[in-house]
Image (cartoon, rainbow, N blue to C red; front, side, top):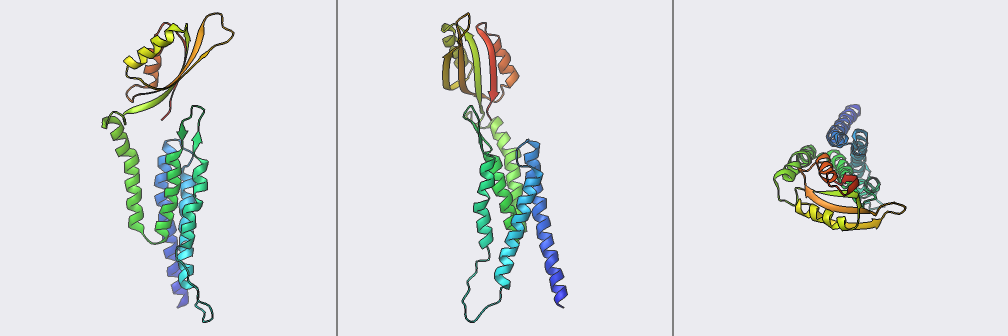
Amino acid sequence: MEWLVVDDFSLEIFFRLLVAATLSLIIGIERELKKKPVGLKTSLVIATFSCLLTIISIETAYTTPARDDINITMDPLRLAAQIVSGIGFLGAGVILRKENNSITGLTTAAMIWGAAAIGIAVGAGFYIQAFMTVLIVVLGIEVLAPLLFKIGPKRLRMREVSLTILAEHAVNIKNLLDYMRQNDMHIENLCIRDVADSETSLHEVDVRFSTVRTNNTLELYNRLHELSYVKKIKIEYLD
């Protein structure tokens, strides 16, 4: 009858690996739709292998035969504990710092850690808990967060913008800053430099500011380009 026990055990392992892979696809699809570094394949690999290591860790602890001459104490989740810390190397690889000092990839790094958590939970047999966690996370990212960005407190409805403008004459720099403040653009950082080798008095103004999310890039670009003293514009939303 040992072959029957082995078959049942194999089916249970297969089922756990399949559940972990399926749940990880939900996270992978969400990242793929947003064109993030971690997508379907990465999430599936992390969750499935984490599930396998968790199963191995648990089963090894309970199937290792006892010895009379040695007292062995084994933690059923010792490998799973190493997954949580080791997965941080993958997470660090997707966190990027751009030239404008903005940091991206934090949510994706958290998703990597979450994919490993799904694998561990399913590998340990916590199917319902893993499913509910994925559901809550996806709803929070796709429904709750966008809703708060639209109807939440004003600070949540603000977006950070990086703006580089080439303006004529130093006196117009003050006019530009006054215009931005009057139009609900909250300046957070300002850098001004002279443009060398120019026939006229040109100045490059780098501004980092926050504005409401209803102002899209094209609208903001057109409004600023209408100013007579503005010659060139480079604008980028940071989040």
